[in-house]
Length: 517
Image (cartoon, rainbow, N blue to C red; front, side, top):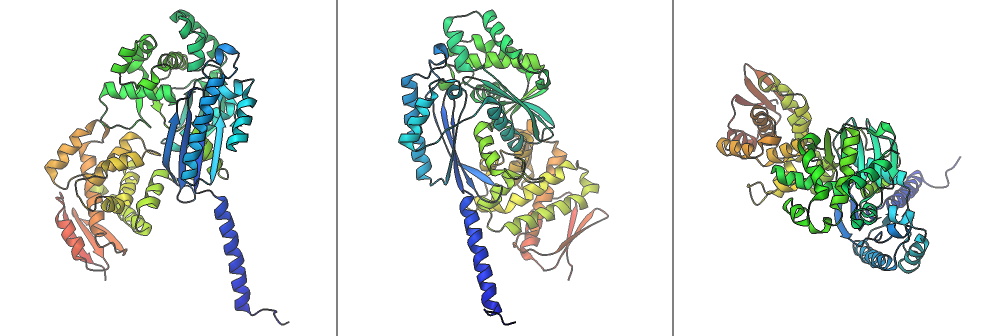
């Protein structure tokens, strides 16, 4: 049988067909996605840029405090004309931002104020007709689910917790166990609703407490939790105030954890504070009108749950909406052993991703080889391997200076998937001085959040040696042996740069550089 086409032409046609299909799939996968969240208090925009299959980074955010729910709750939920006009023009602005950034996809969700409004169709139709924007009004359970998905993927590993998202018109709860949202609930209890119905009418604290507790009685008992993950402006503002009072060593809200017992008195008193008193807590002016109502709700929830710890989360409905779209084929969860922060940094800044993976393996092997000397906990092996993986990126970012300019950048970029202790340790190790005295002083500055100094210095030694081995950026086979307290390093090729780099490290043990060839 004679082929109609030569084999090589047939292969070319097949490859060409496959490439065209790959191009089509890539076009469907939006690189930039805008998420717009229409809440009772504000309309917010975030724009995420995708850098690989699961990795992305935030490239723009904007917020307009238009209060679309203002005046609605005392008028049977009916949206007021002025409020709808403000919201319309805010959306007009946010769409201009997404257009300028060439977003391929726009996901717009609306929550309590619109879902409660009998006249929401007036607003939705105007927006669709004049702005060509479709708004999805989500129910309370979906809103709660989005909050849970955002928190479980973008916080560090926590076995069990409940998210609490106090909004303007409602409060949402999501129960998370072992990385999955197992239950959700929504209550018609929010800051603007409480303000208009009770606070603005000068109701007593006793009446306010009774009103909140009556609504909380609807919540099933299985939502009680020792750990609450707080979402939304109220809990973020409260957490920021606590950080301010504690003189917390780093300015990083996402993942901040505090004891309810230690701050119970403050939380109880905030609903009765004046604006002047609230400003002394470093609470921003745009939060003053609803912070009392929000904290009043939160205090009753914490008391009912008998909560021991609160963890602040900057990941909520917007992030959850994005992640349920991004992770639609993986049950709305990142794959095992995937760290969004590390992968996004490598995608964004690495000159050679293979080089990053190489130095990561070197550091991991060093940790195992030196274990008889350092005796550090096994959990630090993963952390030092992550630190080493970022080391080539750190060198690039500090190329004009050795003063550790990238320290704050890493604190910001390691926001997801790490607790504060972990991300501070990584950022500090990457930028710590090689001079012992200076290193000790830098450690003391952040000692509250760091492991003991013995562990810290040994992690520094491991990272410094791994960096030295990779000084010429050559990926070669390397072997380690520990003989009578002497670290023997076997390299395939002789490296002057490696030898000089090792000599700069003040190590408490001997190092011998040998050739394996």
